[in-house]
Image 1 (cartoon, protein in one colour):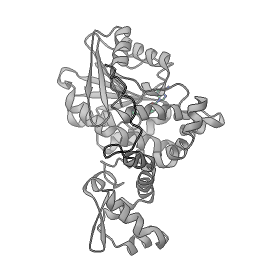
Image 2 (cartoon, protein in one colour):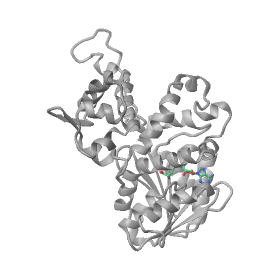
Image 3 (tube, helix red, strand yellow):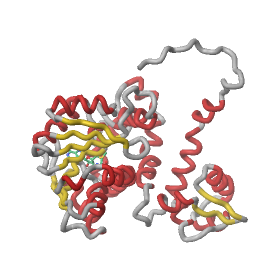
Image 4 (cartoon, protein in one colour):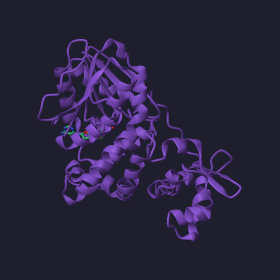
Length: 347
Ligand SMILES: C[S@@+](CC[C@H](N)C(=O)[O-])C[C@H]1O[C@@H](n2cnc3c(N)ncnc32)[C@H](O)[C@@H]1O
């Protein structure tokens, strides 16, 4: 329900201060400090054991001038701990920011640092023009651009795993998988979701569907977990080819890349590929129906303005309406982790 808008107070007082405004205005300082630490491999270095500022300076080939401030800022921001003169990873950084651990989520931060950070500098221009502010600004297509260079492709696919592992674990736990035998993950990237589902539910077999160039990355990732017998790759273009048949189809961070017509088309194609009783799961940073709480989901939608020509994020109510339109008989939204939710449709 819309709340009445109060007239604004004109004078500062104890409860009306500029603190939150200033904190938000300078939030990029903290953000970039973390992104540079990930880029430098600081957390991976400290995973081998605590080090002094001098040792960090030498091991990461830094200039000594900024190192104490850099490390102590990360202490103040909760990412490092300091005892005597030694710096160590804080518990979450130890688990999620050491590149050598399977729980590493830094892939998405590496991409944020290399691509999104500079592109978001042009947000104002994006708001004025309505056109993307990334590589496509020079007339190149986003996926063509990413997929042209094997190194960038590898980074992008790894970043997707970092972004999706939390949601994948929640989907493995919250969806009634015992009722189903097969699944296909549409736009699977490295295959973080298929691997997570297969490890959690030994009765499941699945397909990762993506563009042909992704095959080698998917197969290498799946082999790492010894799951090649249960998970296979299907190469295809989800606009040009039929989607693979399976009891459950999943699309994670797919719909928000595209405009309304393509969103509807993908949902319709999923409906056609499913058996009666089959399920479509869409997961994204689904925006709350009132569009006032899920700030990450709303900012993700602005990220789609930066990154795509027509993409946008959506509310659970929007998505359930598209599901109904395609013919799904039951629909529901379930929260996953953080800003992510899944929308489920049963055919
Ligand atoms: C934003 S990523 C999402 C990856 C993964 N589902 C996740 O949530 O981590 C989009 C994926 O869609 C794939 N993709 C893009 N266009 C495609 C197309 N036309 N056909 C099939 N896959 C496509 C990309 O290769 C990429 O893996």
